[in-house]
Amino acid sequence: MKRMLIALLAVLALCGVAALSWAAGASRGHDVDPLAIIASLQATLKLNTSQQLQFDNALAQSKAAHSSMRSGFAQLKAATQSELAKSAPDLASLAALSDQVQQQNSGLRKQARSAWLALYDTMSADQKLVVRDAISARLAEVEAFHAKMRAARGQ
Image (cartoon, rainbow, N blue to C red; front, side, top):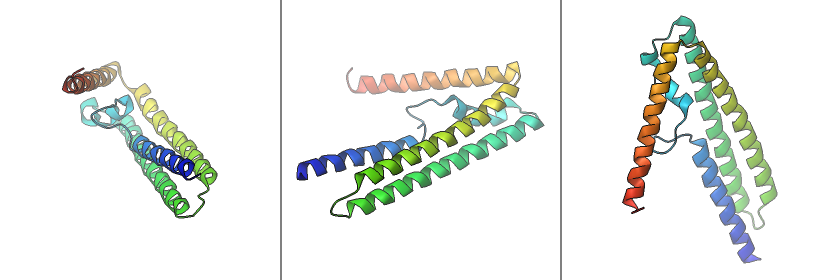
């Protein structure tokens, strides 16, 4: 019984760590999020007034989604710590809360993504080329990073 409880707690801890890293979003060294790349190109894109308003809206939605995700995972962490303080933690309630937070985060990510895609749809062919080139350059950076890490491990 004690081993099973320890195993369940270990799995729950790993799920919590995975959820927190997922909530943190794309890290500079590993992942490529094309929509996040658009956010870094504001000055280069030479947006018109309408596009600038859409950019500001998309950025605000992304920041709000990120903030909400962080608070959801903080809530999950607090609930986990509270349950672990009990002699018989209610893992089912933690799983339900985790599912709820994940579902909420998915909706928020989709809303922010839709705002960025709406902006992209208004871009001229030249602006889309700037975005394409920036994404290609970022992919090359990531691949170089992965090659460097493989070489360091001797693979």
